[in-house]
Length: 116
Image 1 (tube, rainbow, N blue to C red):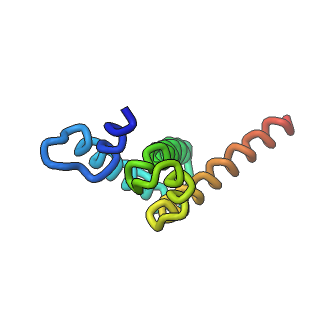
Image 2: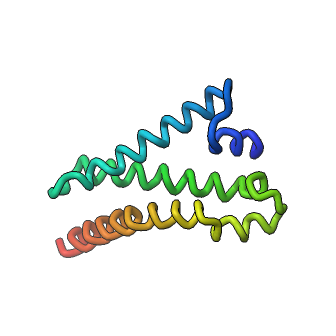
């Protein structure tokens, strides 16, 4: 099962329709995550889009970490080395701002509710 997950989340090969669909889905998520940045105002729809895309990107990062041994081919050491690879660092740096925004929004909502 992990091998198939690895095949799906990596760049699709000819004839692998599930991997191709995953690539297209992730491209759409990337574009969707940029939409709120194009507007000065934040509203509920943009916040929900940010939450959803952040969750998807975190899931993708976790799947890549879960299958790191197939990508790096170094056995259990791959799980330690993977977070320090260039692409993993780029992925993490692209997720963190959204994750921080989602966390900040959640904390502000909690503070507002506790003030009532």
